Image 1 (cartoon, helix red, strand yellow):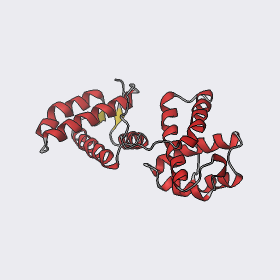
Image 2: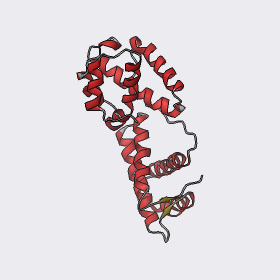
Image 3: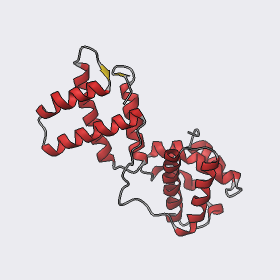
Length: 208
């Protein structure tokens, strides 16, 4: 692993992006909050070191010197070690298969073909596999939401439904960042009404 992060200036932003990715992959908010707490414990420890820089070496020091003495349960210690390992994988760009929530939403059958076409579109646009997976998750959440609101045709989605879909997402921030890619795909294919594009302008500020 090859990373070196300044605890004072860069650590928090990396942690928040890592946690956002967990939310995007439908980890529960409680699990994500636990990860944040565990990583903050590690941050406090590294701040006490002579050189407060986060590296694999300082992470190892925390695991070996601090974790065994923490006043927490054995289960919590295991969760702390897991959070560090996954965070380090994220920082180093190592491949990691995130688990999926067993209660994840199932895509309504009426929208299955459009999602398959969307995946093909993203592949043709050069998106990496992980990026495609994340955008697919939010597209499925969006379509599931509008289906539950009584819309069963892709070209009949009214703009008013966008806000409800965003607010019902597992991560509102993630939905705001990723849904614009799906809506742009719909516009390019001529599958969305103009009012849906206008709604996106108000609800989703930019594509990411």
